[in-house]
Length: 441
Image 1 (cartoon, rainbow, N blue to C red):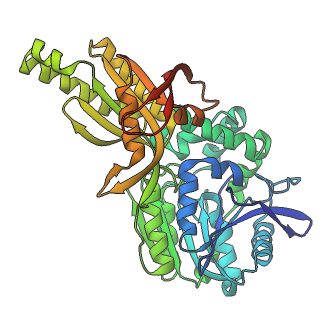
Image 2 (spheres, rainbow, N blue to C red):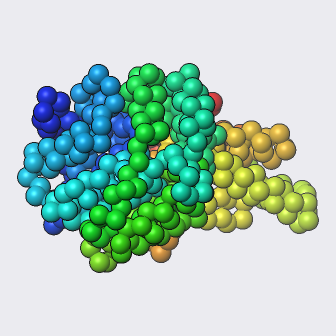
Image 3 (cartoon, one colour):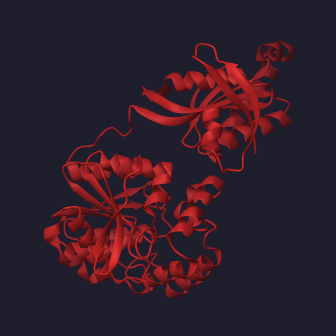
């Protein structure tokens, strides 16, 4: 079930918040520029990030005033008002003190809060942020002119997912990621309010409070971050007494996007608890894909070893290229068979269709089967009933067909993908009859 939404009263303003987990320490996550508690929770990578945090602490999430599910206000909030909102939320959940996780634009407010209320701040975690987004004290800080030009683009294209190009460049060409950011943009604030919030970056400067921060501080930063250059994180670490910085080989600004989650989470857990938990759960939800060449034995005999080897090379190369585009993970290969997994069913279908089309044009007919289910992690490999089901679905596919289970079809409603009912099938070794569908884009 989704965590319940509650409201804390901060003066005349209602601040939306969620509490997840019941760990021995409180961690209050302060989002950056814009947010929406429910939309963020619907994103699989963001949800997994939050659940992992909640596994070792009591996680408190908020929508800053003027955004998401919190009250809309007449204009952008000051840092002082936003500090009041944090205190009001902590009071509402009975938290006397908490660690603050400030992401991106939330950094300056968290810095000021830690300096002003050290008795209510256990520690400070600063993720891909800085003390001042405009300034000349470090390399890479923006100019007012560059920000103004970006403001214009933001307001003109708000609701289309343009922010993905800067915040998640590793997936800027993934339509599913762009749609997710477009949905967040539309639900978080209006175009004009987005510009107003962004314009505050020109005036916000918390550099003068860095020497007053006395709580333990961890700075985490992606080296290739375009939204907030790593020099800003280094500046924080140099000017906060005792602060430690960890830099990651990543271009993404968002801590929970793709591999960033596996980079940021262990550092956060160790900083707060002194130990690192397992980086992967024992069971995980995946969309599995099985692909093989139609009548491979017959073709191998007809072509001979050398020509057949060239066919297999093309088969593997085509699939691996598509996996890079659609965020798939190669799990295993065997002869003319390929096993891969995805963290999203729509991406899996689009990847499978692109593989089928590319190999069909090369006169290499294939069968592809997809199923979504909970898989077991066994020595770095995936196993369990969901994997067996995916293999059996592939076995029922026709030449040059992408066949999916009804589970996959139901999970991609609204994606624009098309399906043709292939009826019910008995899948060897599995109970009941399975409704299968031929997928296309």
